[in-house]
Length: 230
Image (cartoon, rainbow, N blue to C red; front, side):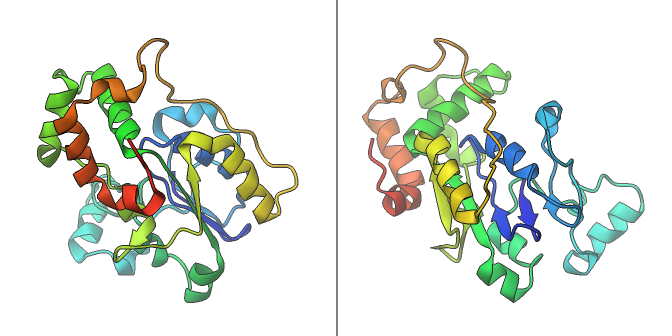
């Protein structure tokens, strides 16, 4: 889920394949009734805080056809009326006043792209959405959805997140962010979406030189911004 907490003055920009589910479920426990929370799909049973709320896009910001489709019964998410879980920063900015956007702490998570690509592959394979080898999966990048994390927490190529937690040190980073927000009794992180035992050895073992280079090109912005190495 994406979260805008007017009560606690933070924004959580949810990225993909970064352990974000655990963080969002924890942050939802801090939210008040006026805060924006998108849905959490299959992990709803793990929620200890508020459910999805206030997650309909302001109608004056969406095209007429979206409003019309919704009025005639189309699902709000398909019609573009309901905020997506992975809403881009440029979309979230429209939900805030300029003062809120400038002063709220914007939080996100990132992960080594080479590791993240393996996790994405194994997730799709486990759920019957991928039958090929890892090399085939990487080569098909232009015909499948590339993970858009950089565009979730950046606008116009500039990172707007104030706090970028690392997947590799998520627990410690989360505690540090809670301290900077002044949360005296922070919620704990659940361990969700983890790989099955023995499923995921060192991510480097999945790569050859061509796949390594392809991922480096595809996610060059993340690699350069955060100094990731293979």
